[in-house]
Image 1 (tube, rainbow, N blue to C red):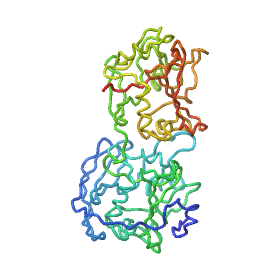
Image 2: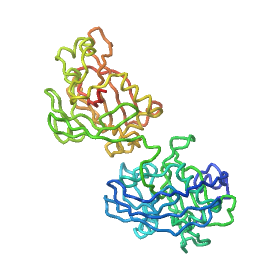
Image 3: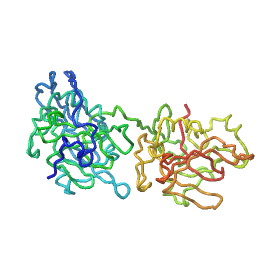
Image 4: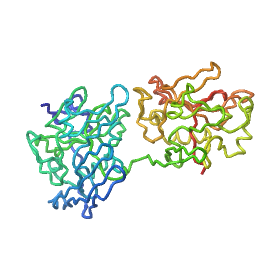
Length: 457
C-alpha cells in the first residue's frame, strides 16, 4: 500500500499530485433546501428518482439517503446515483472502458486487475475522462465539485468518504451517500490505493495546457486544515478516477445537431461553435470530379471526398486558372454544400479559429487514432481528421493520417492568374507546437482538398 502525505508540500509536488495548496480555502455553506431529483437522463440511461439530504449551515444532519439507478446504454453497466443539494451525482466511480487511442493512451484498472475496476472504477487520463460519462451526464467542473464540498460543510472529506474499511486508517461517515473510496492513481506506477482518492474535473488551470484540475480525499485525519480534502492540479497523462453529474456541463462548448443532405440522403453531424453552425464531418457528396483518397470508397466514408477549388464552389473549371472572385462574391457560395449551407470564406474560418484561441489545431483535432499519438481533445466537437489531399503536381495522393486540408471560398491573389485559393490545414507534427499544428495559407486550385460546410444564416 502506498500513501501520499499531503502535509509534505515539496514531496507532494514531485510524489503526489501537483497541488496548488495543501489546505482548502474557506468554504461557505450554501442553502440547498430545494434539492432536485434524479429524473431521467438522455440516451445514456435512466436514473430513477433519488432523494438527497439538505443540510443546515456547516453541513448539519442530512435527510435519509435514497439511491437512484443509472444504466449506461453503452455497456449496460449500472451505477447508483444520489441527489446532494441541487446536484445529482453518480454514487460510484465510472467503469466505462474508453477506446484505446494511439499507442500509450488507455484507461486502467488499479494493478491491472478487473476486480479493482469493479470495486473502485477505472482510472483515466484527463482527455479520456472528459468523454467517459454516459450521454446526459458529464464530468463535473471544479465549480461543481466546489459546490458539493461547500454543501457538505465542515469536515467535507470525512462526510463524503464511504463507511468502508478500504480506508485503512479512517473510514468516513458518508453523510450524503457519495461513497468516496480510496481508488489511488497511476502516474508512472500504481499508487495510493486504500489511502487516497483522486478524481478529475473538466476544468483546465491557467498553469499550463498539460494540466487539469483534480480533487482528492486522504485517509489521514491529521490533515485537519484540509478537512481531508485537496484541491489541486495534475498532469493530464496521470490516470485518476471519474464521477459524473447529471445534465449538460455548464462549461460545455459542444452542441451537436444533425443535417440530412436531400440529394443523396447522407446524414452529417453538425456542431455549434460560437454563433456559427459547422458540419462536424467532412462533406462526402459525389460531385463530378471529386475523389476519394487513393480512389477507395472506404476513405470517402471515413474522411469525406476531396474537391478541386472550382468543383468545391460549383464553378466552371476555368476558375481554377483565372480569377472568379466576382462570381463568388455575387453568389451564396453554396458550391457543393447542401441547400442552406455554404463553403466558408477565409474570414468565416478565421472567426471560428479566433474563438477557439490558443493551440487551436490541437483543440480541433478529433480524438482519433487516425492522428496517431498526436490526437486532440476535440474540445469544440469539430472532429478534424487527417484527410490528406491530391497533389496535381505529382498526381499523387499525399499525407493521409498526417494533415487535414480544407478549402475556403476565398481566392488568395497569390499570382496574377489567381490560380490559388486560401486553404486551412491542421498538421499532426509535434514540431509545429507554436502554431498549434494549424496553418493559414493557400493551395493551387487544382489540388483536391476536403470541404467543411457552414450553415448559411
